[in-house]
Amino acid sequence: MKLKAAFLLSTIVLGAAGPELASSAVAQPVVVIGPSGLTLKGTATGSIWGIRFTATNGTLTCGGSYDGLISSPTITTQVLCSDGRKGIVIATRERSGIAGHGTVSLNDGSEWTFMFGHAAANFQDGSASRAPGSELQGQGQPVTDR
Image (tube, rainbow, N blue to C red):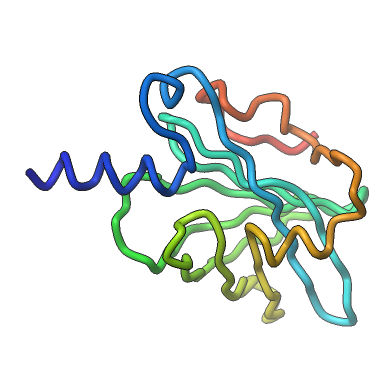
């Protein structure tokens, strides 16, 4: 019963249902705002392999992943950046499961704001921007920096 409930929740989190879940990935916009307003934009992509997020400003890229079957509204996961920094994301999902916000704490002591879903869409420039490594999303491969 617990596994069935987790699967149903992951279906909501991924924003897809039925047989399409196995063959498609669902992407939501992500924005990460750092000190002095430095802004990284990208996507969080969910599939049956989990949920991966990546954001970039063209110079700095940060990303990570987490298990989409986690039923808690609070997500805690690691983040790695292309400049060698790493840290922890603590984000809270809204009821929809496909939007939320939180904080990124990096090992240099900096604190960043993390948003995904409709709130992050307000920061996107309207173009279908893809972060480096996004071509791997939905294929069960980890997001990598280039």
